[in-house]
Length: 80
Image (cartoon, rainbow, N blue to C red; front, side, top):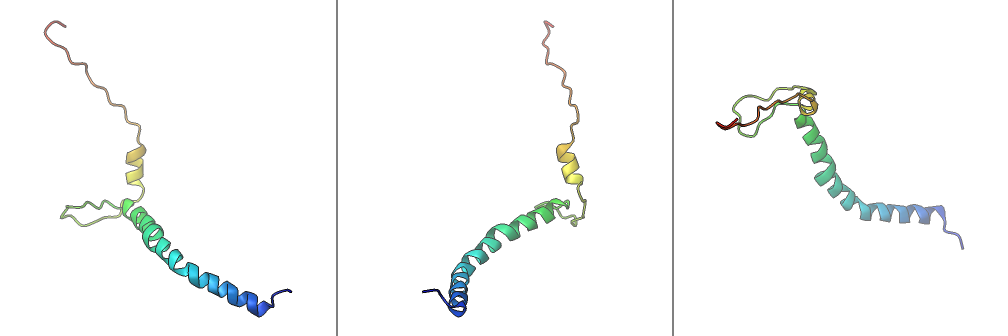
């Protein structure tokens, strides 16, 4: 016997009602902090800095991916 549309609708509601707390917790503890951290990565925020936070855009990512060349002189003793 086939289920009536009203019965299908009520079972869908029950499923969503049971999944809603899990979806809410995932949003609260994973999705929201991800976007908050991305937003902070676009600023010059420091943990213990008295200076106000400023928007720096993608400069932090440019600094991170900058391939500057670092040359170090070898350590030498008196023998050469």
